[in-house]
Image (cartoon, rainbow, N blue to C red; front, side, top):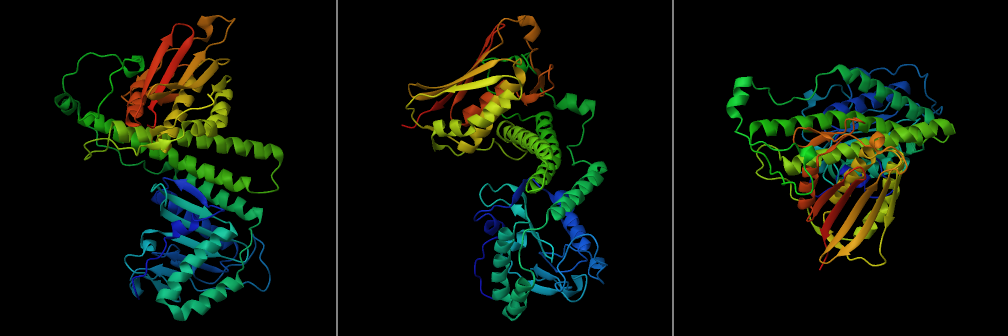
Length: 486
């Protein structure tokens, strides 16, 4: 075999439309749950068809026995066959293969597929591809999943290149499988059953041990390690003249960030699973309108919460970097059209505010220069600002946003006007309370958001800065300044 460079499976799946489902942060447990759900689905079609995987066998040996009776899912007569599994693996010893009859396709050590656990199923009733690894664009770890025939076809062609390269004598058998199991859209019942299996697997894991957290220290150790602190206001009470916190070096601060990162992972994982289930259900054409409305709401709420916790995670990396890193994550600053970014996100921001009983209006001048910032990070932080305003202002408020040119800067201003003609004391919300150094909680609503000092730190990292002015019994004014492109 020569050292030809193959395209990774994730790159092939993400190369064109339609795109597969993407589950960010899907770790080993979520992957095992997805594999278990797919194999149960394969059992329901009598284990007919072919199971393909790598770089290790994902199917237990007892599933490669005599096929059970076919009952649950529809299959076309004449296409019921038991095919030998195919295994793509780097130098796997024969004794480690759980059952005889596998067709083994060896992989070179530098092949990207070695680092991408995958499972592909072709059956008379459906075809599906699932791959775990790093997103080809964001480099974020997660998992891709799709029942779409076109996406499965791209995966099949990507794997065929490796068959042709390392085992050309098996190419005819490989192509025969494609003829025997043509790719078609699965019936809605298949997606519903998979969703049920995946959800049942998630519920079964609910009692499993949580992620490993930093070891707790005794009171004496904490007192000895804690430096002398000067009296200062809590983060929630700091206004526009707040000092920007630096990355703490004490062990207690690092433990707070590590704890928060672990909690974010534990929260995002089930939310990503639920969002994937909702997306699969929404692809069904026979959903009653009322059910579709409910599922769309579930999908929207999960997406919103995932975005919020992604912002929290980004804050921990910027303000409190992981142990061993001397400074926070550096952002990639580049020229961006702030007007386009704001206009693209405005419908989502308005919907977010309106669901809290208020309204958001935006004023944009005819001409406005581009700014220099990190587009993805800026979009995430602006989402956090809107989220904070939507959750912390009384229902009936009017949030006025303006884009303005301010010399060598561009200003995005949010001005909150509380409802008129009502008892101000009855609509005035309590001040947020600090939760450690990163987050604050709104006592009236229980909503959690980034503290203002941390938000100011993030805007400094984005090349700009944030000021906040509180107006007694009227609302507040947030000014975001970003450097214009010269």
